[in-house]
Length: 81
Image (cartoon, rainbow, N blue to C red; front, side, top):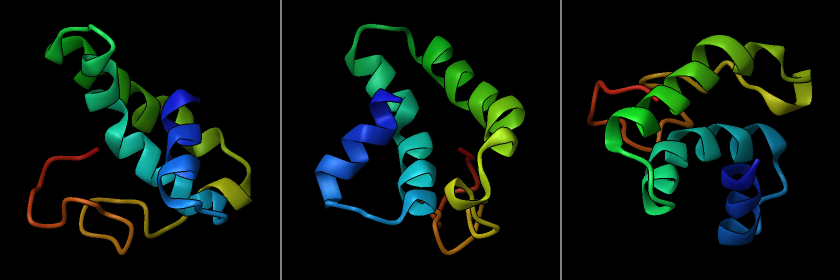
């Protein structure tokens, strides 16, 4: 939730699907900044993607939220999320 809301502040984003996708991609880095290890931060992001993202309301998810999709912040990388 913190990562999602940070995206709203960062970009004044109104599109919930883009905000959710971008927040998820930055979740690991945010967790590290808050003091977790890189491995745990990566686990948090992967767990959200693998287990929770699909449960979002339709307005909060997008088919473009994927590796190589239009909402991929790091398109040059094959790391997801």
